[in-house]
Length: 133
Image (tube, rainbow, N blue to C red):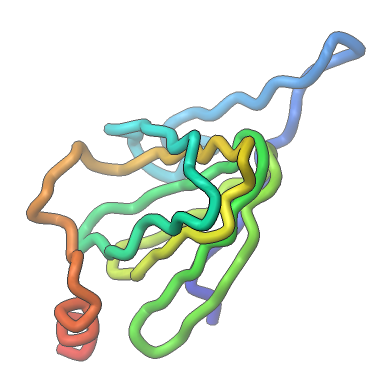
């Protein structure tokens, strides 16, 4: 069983270029309550290192690439995000780490909930304890 699901975003466009439309409850399988993007990540820097109790996310590498490592406490998978037409659906209670950002990486993330610090699990030991309950 996979820790994530890919979502294909069909590109629209013509000879002028391409466009991808992202719509809540259609191309994105939840109501989008927060959008943010990560960019300008310095060489050798890794990010993430947390899980969420309830929040779901879809991550899209709009440009460049990065490697996402996902872990549910029993299984660990790594996947490359490197296409603006593929989204990575990450469910709740999955530890996530982002590594090997290309210098031009722009990682767009859509979240099912507003920012809530109490939803974050920032300690890996605490995460392992919670998934074992």
